[in-house]
Every structure is written in C-alpha cells, then in structure tokens.
Image (cartoon, rainbow, N blue to C red):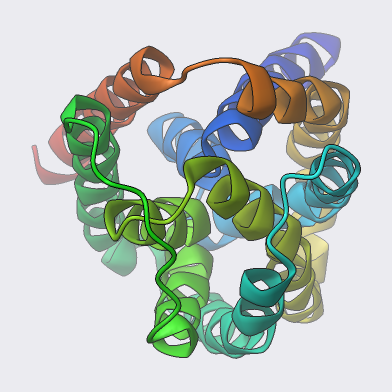
Length: 250
C-alpha cells in the first residue's frame, strides 16, 4: 500500500510540474499512466479529477500571485468549460469502460501528438486572440472529462497556436481549470462514490504529489523555456497510448 501511494505521488508530482509549466497534460499524463496499468477509464478519470481539484486550486493561486493570469480570458473560459465538463463526466460515468477504453487511448494519442508538434513548431508572432473562446471552452471541458485530461492540451495549445502570449495563456487556463475540474468531480463522486473509495490510494498519491509540485511549476512557467519538456511529454504520452492500444487490440 505504501509503495502504491509513493508511486502515485511521484506520478502526481511529475504530472503537475508538467501541467503547471506548460498549461497542459496533468490529466493526460496521469490518465495515460493509470490506463496503462489497468485502471478502468471512468475510475481513472474520476480519480485524476478529484485529486486535480486540489492541485488546480494551489496552481491557480500560484499563477495569480505571479501575475500570469489574463483576467478577461480567465472569465470567458469558466462557464463554457464547466458545461462541457459536466456533460462529458456524465457520459463517461454511464459507459462501459472496456468499450470506450480504445477510443480514449486514441484521443490521448492524438493529444500526445499535438503536444509534440507544438514543441517542434517554430516561434510565431504574438497576438491576443479572443474569438470563439466559448466554443473552445465547451470542447476542452467535454474532452477533459471523457479522456481524463485535455483541458490544457486543447485550450492552451489552440490559444498559443493562434498567437496568444504563452505565459498569460498558461496562467489563465490553469487558473480556470479549478472550476472545470470541480464540476467534473461532483458528477464523478455522485456516480462512482464506492469505486472511488476503493481506489483511495490513487487519489491520495496524485493529490500529495500535485500539491507539492504546483507552486514550483508556476515559477517554471515564469522563468524557464519549456519546449524540450513539452517534447518529452508528447513522446511519453504517445508511447503509453501505443502500449495501451496494443494491450486492448492484441
């Protein structure tokens, strides 16, 4: 039991460092690992999001204190993101995990490729783009719930690719993520309470690791370049999903 908690703590720590620094990939990274060791999709996503409720709160406060948040962008993301997240969590809670697992693996594989491509892209001119934020928020929230992660990869990647300032995009997306994650967690706990209690070591480990890492990750966002880290994350996620698909299909 202690070994399991320490393992999930390490996963949570690394995932939060990645997420806080890049504005993405806590859920994708954590969920990829949990699926690869046989945790059912609904339980994996629910566990990640219950733990992430606390880690995103710490991360959001850290970004606010460091001045990494665009308040207008932050406000535009919250309500659409919550709506998409609630619908996605409800659907996932009522689907057989064995049926949906390969589809989630494909989705996470695509997210890994998106992250890797983003890391390899050349620099682009910076501009502030605010159109279609609501649509982006709904899509990001929905797939975040379905795949156990995706709010950052979808929302952050899209906004930065369209020219928004990476620092303020990452800070705003991370800060708004608390509300999206909280909404999902309410739905998951209501639908899967007994299963979540049975998997408390997963939640506790992810929670401890994420809370420890969150303040450090916000500093990384402000101080350090992150393209190499993003590339490594993309490759890791791609590798995990190829392994999961191999196990499911063969």
